[in-house]
Amino acid sequence: MSSNPHPFETLTPSFILDAIESQGYWSDGRSFPLNSYENRVYQVGIEDAEPLIAKFYRPGRWTDEQILEEHQFSFELAEQELPVVAPIVKDGQSLFQAGGFRFSLFPRKGGHAPELDNPDNLFILGRLLGRMHLVGATRPFEYRPSIDVQSYGYDSAAFVSEHFIPAELKTSYDTLTRDILQLIEEKIAQVGDVRQIRVPGDCHGGNMLWRDDAPHFVDFDDARMAPAIQDIWMLLSGGRSEQLSQLSEIIDGYSEFNDFQLKELQLIEVFRTLRIMNYAAWLARRWEDPAFPHSFTWFNTVKYWSEHILELREQFAALQEPGLTLV
Image 1: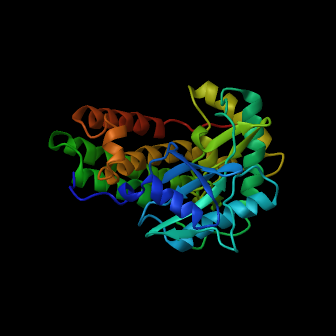
Image 2 (image 1 turned 180 degrees about the horizontal axis):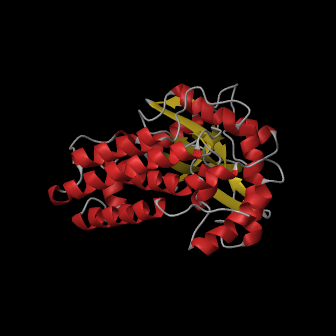
Image 3 (image 1 turned 90 degrees about the vertical axis):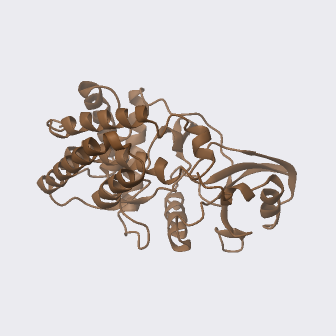
């Protein structure tokens, strides 16, 4: 662990309030952190008005152009009256600067986590994703990257292997990830070309708030280019029969507004595996951030890496099974 202070440690309450007030708001002095690790997000009280949400971006992760593309995507979705929480625009700007940090402001929206075991909710989510993907397909991202085998797979495995895997597990990890990535390449080749579109990219319950009988997307920080299935597979859970039932509801809703390429179903385990590998590497790359050892105490132990290898073995087996199909 480095002894140098992490940049986020300079985000003191007074710094946060000064940053908000630099944009013409008068704070009531109250702020508290929200659950976020990649960036730092705070709810800030405003005099005689609703609180705001302030998001301070992790230094060095995205360029200004990449952040503004994320904002532009959410603006396009909002223009189509889709339930997304877009950044606040002040004097034509949505990205602000304070003390070396870039930050954005958002209106506070209430709600609760979606009930993904409810078929009606899955149908509603499918309809929303179908409409979002119509917007996402109108043009590509110019600056933001793609979810691909190189960055999520090969780069993740190389970083973990070089810096984190215990010596006694290194051979097992290296040979397993090599075989997995080779199989992933083969499966992608078998499926052939699929349409790459702009997607939220991290479509899980933590990035949605359910209110007024509809989901509201609140975070597009992981927006990237990817096939439509990237936003769909993350809504699935349980065994094969359960996933088929869930998938049927989602695609039925999706198809009311958009055409879904059924061959993308063969990529579900591909993207699930890449996410597992990328998540482990994300924790490893962020281990110098004091918030990570404090919050993820179970990470970077022999037990964790042994279980991670077991999970990857299970995924290797899943990749060899027939993919889900809808009749």
